[in-house]
Image 1 (cartoon, one colour):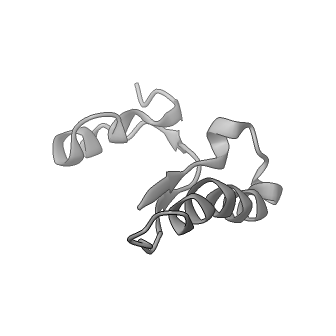
Image 2 (image 1 turned 45 degrees about the vertical axis):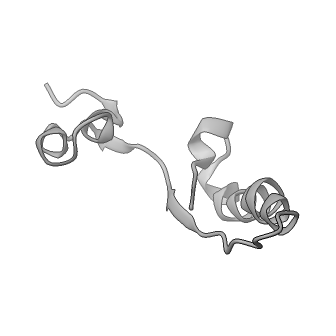
Amino acid sequence: MANVHPWFANVSAADGAGWTAQFFQTTNVDAAAALSNNPKMYIAETGWPTFFDEPWKDAQFGGVEGWWGLFTAK
């Protein structure tokens, strides 16, 4: 399982899908194919931050999930 976020690579939304597929293929799928147990690889999470922080997610999920907005909710 891989998390692939075009946001961290400064990729535009218009190029995001193609970049995500290429990055996942070369970074995860190709590397996994070289392993003897031949694991199947999947993208678990991808995308961009939300517009505002979502504090309610902190209570439910913890960590950074609620604070990944471009602007603060306050």
